[in-house]
Length: 148
Image (cartoon, rainbow, N blue to C red; front, top):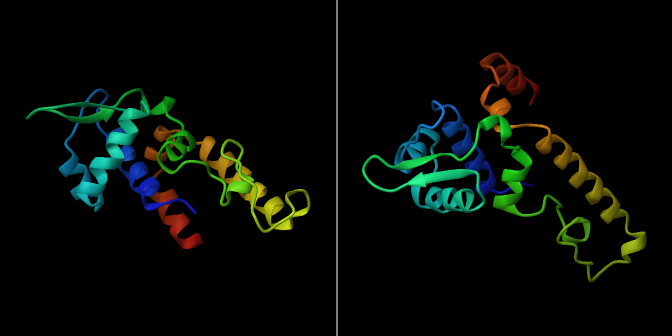
């Protein structure tokens, strides 16, 4: 499962992707519009800035903006920057692999399933750009809610 940090980071990034290119906005506006706790959002936006997804400017006319076009920002990369590896367990991670203490790694059915879950999540998250998320139509969103 993804964390609230990842979810809030995506919501904030989509908010910024809706602004005109190069435009910025303040944390308070993003937090209020998206119902995200401001202090938590400050931390999240700082991490996204440090990872190169956002740029910021201090001062009265400052705020956050996308550091590159929304079409160039891969959703999976943002999630990994905020939440770390996509694998549900360390034994299923590509980059942060750690064997479990309680199983035979080469014959663990749970690990096999977790690797498949990791791969499925990565396939979906890496297939979308921030621009594609931003451009989801109200009709698509409405039909998705009916799907759940």
